[in-house]
Amino acid sequence: WSPERLDRSFRPLTFLTYAVNLRLSEEAWAFHAVNLTLHAVLVLLLYFLLLELLGNAVLAASGSALFAVLPIHTEAVASIGGRSEILAALAIFGAWLLALKNSRRAAEGRESLGLACGAGAVTFAGLFARENAALVVPILVLAGCWAARRKVPWVTVAGCAAAAASYLAIRETILQGRGSQVLFVDNPLFFAAGLTRFLNAEHDPALEQLER
Image (cartoon, rainbow, N blue to C red; front, top):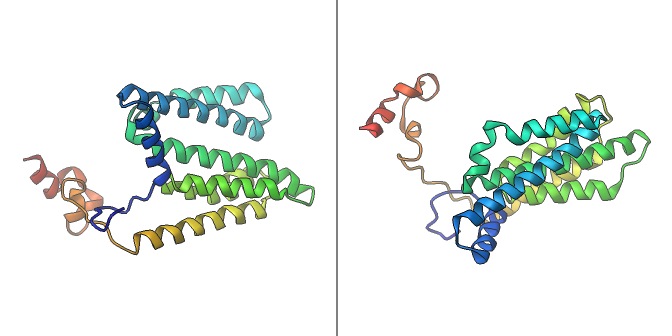
């Protein structure tokens, strides 16, 4: 994150895993092996999450097995650069599972502070892997509790929200409000005018110019 940096991607945890990976082996297969291992852990975590939600081991196993082989995950798993997606998903599923466990305690009148802090810590770590780990809070409230007709574990949600706020404060302090330099080759639509960006990207003049 030097003063000459071109983008605002702040994912130190992801880059740390790359650094450790490189220290262990410079071969491409080693990076792919770590991605596959992380994906396997994610599938296992999803099994326990579905088990908590559905209360049925067969359904939980079927759902996690389907998730494991969905083609939509190909880019995140097969591409070395997709590791941040897997790490963020681990954080989201992990915090969600802890929140579901705490929702049962909330129904009994008292949440576990340990589970709430654990969910916040997992969220905090996930945000340093990829920003979309911030989805933890709305997922906890909407999908995790209201849709499943469970009591919302507000202490856990507050812990995750505090983690997200802390991350944003740290991120802005380090980046010091510097904006991103958008390059034409990265995002031609950024340079398009009017409704072109939204209505007809395939025939966008900027894209046609890039194709030439």
